[in-house]
Length: 434
Image 1 (cartoon, rainbow, N blue to C red):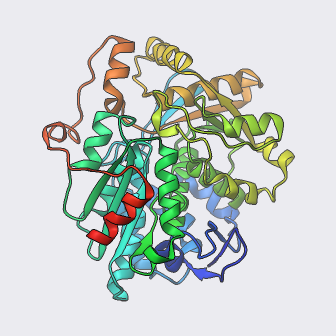
Image 2 (image 1 turned 120 degrees about the horizontal axis):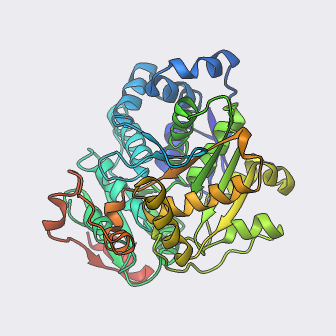
């Protein structure tokens, strides 16, 4: 499989080269030359297959010959080393828990898959040290830090907005040390992301430092997220009904992966893009005008993105046909007040403790189902982070105490290791002074 730039001004590359580069030389996002179809036999056999078998079949055509099949199978098995429970909330709505991994966030899957692909590439072809430069609005940083911790030949530099990630999220990305460095930015996620983009287009820097990104703009991070949708389809309640999936959306890599799986042939009926007040995409789906905006801080901070990078890939999947996209994706946006009410509603109806992102996703699914003939639909919303990561918010709203899972029991007592970097010049100086 080859990949081309969506800026259409760079040469095509293979899978591993696209993963290593992150962005194409013309600053475009990589996109596969073809979308490989799933066979009907495979679709019919999904209920009988393991998660590992489903994921391998989905990703193998995108990897091609770049990684031997036996090694790719091992990478998939190591990536999906935890469960993805589906929990009923109402008769027609269930939660798919994507947070059972080491950093309690859905991004563990993409980060672990990408780290293992790059580790293989470093084994077979010794290259100079690669630096993963990534901006995080919350969970990406922790997942990337854990996924790449002590990986040979790779350093990780993470930019995060000061005071705009939860305590657990901050600890996950600032306490490892070794090959992981956290840079604290006095600004928003968009400020962090703009600094990262500036670094990638700075020839003075890139001539000295081999940079790539581990945000969902990277194809390994993005495409591995398809795995969730195969698991959702396999284990969905009421399999005789059409499946609707609601995705809490920030940079839109997760939703874009689901749309890719659908275009390959996975029978998902409809998608709901659920956002907080950073509603660039729901507004677009309503008006037809795409207008990026400055991000606003909310209690669902991982979705505080005003100009989602992956939306260009979604447009490409539909050949920029607005009306075709609207048939497949609906968009809904919610305030913090609505999110808090949803947390209470979910807990009251099922004793289920959601996190703020899952609550937004629940609201989007509920509103979409209320506009349809619900008897024919089964809804699943993605619960993308463990509520412990937002304990002060969730515990105050629900008036309870969340038991900390084993992944965070010792984390909160570790010292924070971070450096202040407040503009691009400071970021560049950091690299040259290392």
